[in-house]
Image 1 (tube, one colour):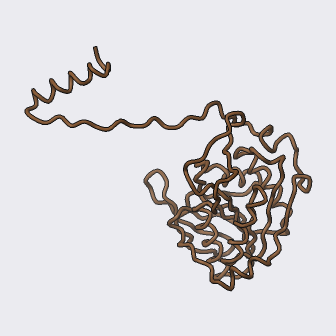
Image 2: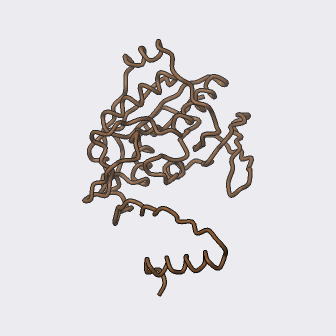
Image 3: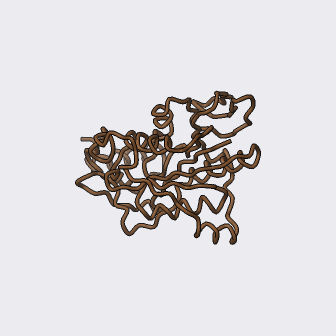
Length: 262
């Protein structure tokens, strides 16, 4: 069984600035980590490999430092790693990202399954996995919390959607997006970490892909950020004690004071 895992580096902090001109995150100088749910996707892939055999290829799209994420993936069981990195891909929205990733995946000899984290902490859209499936013309199961197994070319999973538990089975190949309940990420041992530092990471540029360059990067992204602003800070609450009539009068007085009522 040949599995592809898509992973992404994300800021290790929520205190990230946004470029006012492009509406994209400023990642320079910010510590980066593997997106948390992608770690669960990675572990789910490794568990399937241990159960059914085969190989795992990890793919990441991002700047050159994203190579560190791929080396971490190799340390926990990935066999091959591909970094899709090119300035022309910078600023891609989810559709442009899925389009580029699909083009990179088509260069892989063959695959039976693609596993992604359900969403990323920096975008929180949960769109790339389903869009990737659409680009490749294969089924998608989102928000998978358990993989039951593979039999006769079908994978059976469990997911929670709209407050219901669904048992979903589809023919391979397909795309799964997984939640944290799907697996518990393992930690690499020292030997694996050392070996991963010497592993070969395959680098792909946009010019290596069969893509329409008008559909990649910021200019090829139909999603445009109009305005970015921090959430409004909530003011400290005030409690009014005493009898109901007294508390109501004090509340009314306070609301008039802050001009919420006249």
